[in-house]
Length: 68
Length: 137
Image 1: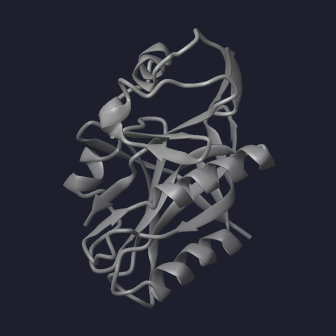
Image 2: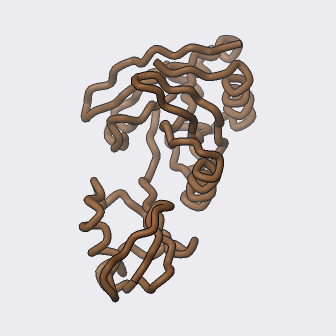
C-alpha cells in the first residue's frame, strides 16, 4: 500500500503499524516523537497496534521544549 | 552561520515581549547552503506550558508550521524561545530537550528589556556551541 510520510510517498506493507513505521524510518529518540495520521494525533500507547491504511498521511513531530 | 532579517528578528522580539512574563517560543524555517542557513520565515507558536520558566511547542501548531514550510519550499532550521529573566544561553533543560544536533536553537534574553539579546546555538548532548548569527537589514 502507499502512504505519505513527512511529505514523501512510500510503498509499505499492508497493515504496517505506526511502531513498525517508526522502526523502518529509523526515527531517532522515538520516545519524544508525536505521530499524526491524517492530521489526528495517535496516542503513543497505540503505536504498536495502530495499523496504517492505504493513502494515510503520516507526520513525525519531535517534542520541542525547554526551560530557563 | 545563520542569517535572519531585521524584520523577522523584530517579530521574535515583539512576540516575546507581548508574552511576558511567560516564555515565548516558535520555529524557524528557511534555506541551507552548505554551512550557511538563511531564515526565511519565523513561526510564533503557543507555549502550552504558559510558564515563565518552561516552554513546550503546541504540537498542532507545530504540525501546521511543518506543512506551511513544505508548501513554501522551506526546510525546518530549528526553534526559538525566550528567557524572560535569564541570559541568552541554553539551560540544562534546553540541552536535555534538544534532540537535533543539526538544528539551530535561538534564545532571546529579555533580562534587560530595552536590550534584547538573541543568540543561536548548536546543541549536542551537554555541549552547546554558539553559532554566528547575523541580523540583516
